[in-house]
Length: 152
Image (cartoon, rainbow, N blue to C red; front, side):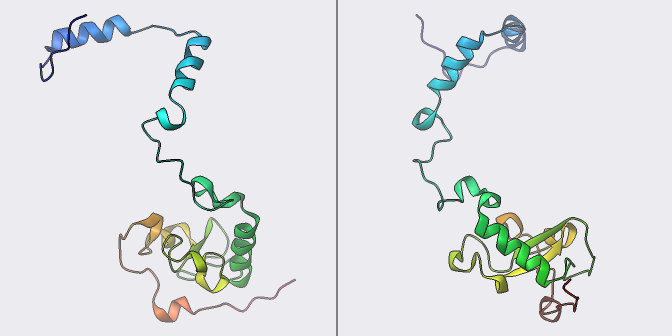
């Protein structure tokens, strides 16, 4: 078997021939299963040492944790299902963590660390999806706004 030419640039014609030769190849389900089994766990290039977050928060899937669901619902009910920035009632709302989920694990389920935001206002927050994108979307006055709603 010959060694590959490292750093050797293939011609466009040769690259097209290689692509054409592999086009239309179908693998059997047995072969696909072998490939899948060969690249699981530590053998996968995405492996990060088997680390997980906390029980119930694996792969950042908070929604399956009953405590998180209760926190989220409590934030929505406290804010009367109203965005605290633009005051939109209903629609697609998010229970946003004022102090980030990652940096403040002790505040993850603290109702005072939550605020109801609509999708557009949530994108403007400084810790949206873990990135420091823009200035805070809500001011100090607006953050403390709590509508009075009747609980039926």
